[in-house]
Image (tube, rainbow, N blue to C red; front, top):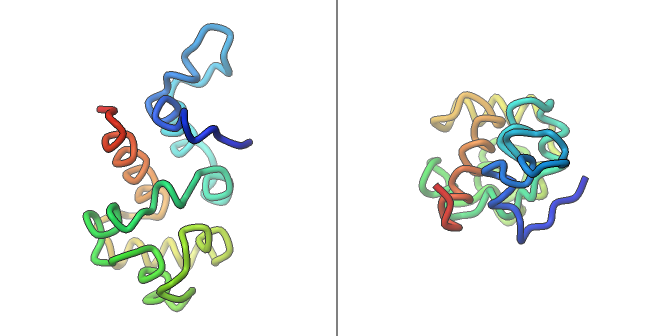
Length: 123
């Protein structure tokens, strides 16, 4: 499944899934994040649009996703958000829960999706 990034805000707020004759989803990406396994979420989300330096600096003690990966021993400080797709999810999940306000990587991605939607004019 690929997402049209121009419609990401609608997907985050569920507007795409609520259309008559749509896919029946009532929550767009937020619904997907709460229901799918973490591996599938990571493969389907536009991580570079969600795990931005702005988000990381506001909600974590890290300047970027690359710094988070480096501190976890899972990458380098120059890694992009797409590197998350290649690292062991259990190790990353543990690092996120121990070093951020989020209990899991899934919770961090959910907040990142909310942050993205709010920055693009959503509520």
